[in-house]
Length: 406
Image: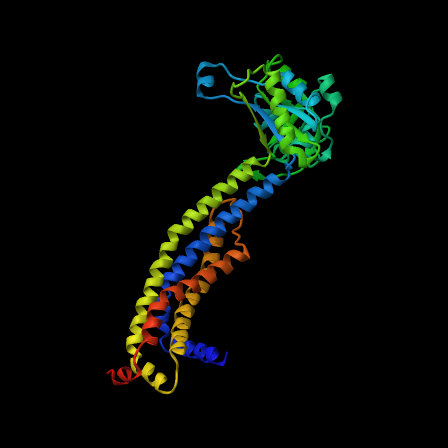
């Protein structure tokens, strides 16, 4: 241990004696580490933001939607869900808890007094409060009696309220939706944006009203959101729902599904896979800088061995072993690389925060502690790997020949 401590002090003294050269030697490691940390911090911050925004949907929520390809849209033969599909989910699939059909109603602008806005208008039922994870800040959400009675009531988001310059509590006000007057019965809690799309610029009206106003009373284009009672049975319920909907749609054995059942968090999982792959690819690309930096360290250390040949000879003459010389030069290489890595981590964090701050509405950068520790450890490892050749050369010098070196 004493020998190791002495070698460590000798390595520090050598680096301190050539500060400028030591700093220039670490530039490759510094730049590579900084690029990796900057990339990871930006992607991780973005990924965390997306995960937080989707967390309210709940992991026990599923969505049934009809599948359409370019041929369907080209020919106008749009594949839609039927009301039988909804009934099958609601009554014939064990484990399904809440079922909420959803229509995107194209009803035009929404007006209040002299102001107008164009939010997303969704026709749905009271179960949407559970399946979509929405809740009201003022007033109430839609009820079953609203849907049965075809009442002209609406629950609005905070952006709709702000765009129309309505009172802080808009409950009881009347808004003009297209050509129909609706009474505001609830104000949704603020949800923020997802991928640049506002979750507050929307409003909910009863499903039956949306069907009648859009002229698609018989078979509207819709999707169905539903929840699973027991999260542990999500996979089994999904399979049962698939079989039941296939039977409802009279699909023959072997025929491909013309619908899809997706988990609410499927987008988050897919996004995480994309960001993980992108991080790995970008880290591999900027890792070339670490390779270049390692080669630079090896070259400088070889030069250092040549310059210090007489010093090595003196150390061996005084009793230093081959292991002592090897340890000292390996420590010098590792410290050089670690220094560049630590500076690179700090600069990478600052660069990531700067990039995130310059992009409007971009989430703050974030780097897990383990990533920084891994970056520092890998930097030191690069120094050790590329320092083996110079250290081995120094340790192998003959002490008599080294003392004679001019």
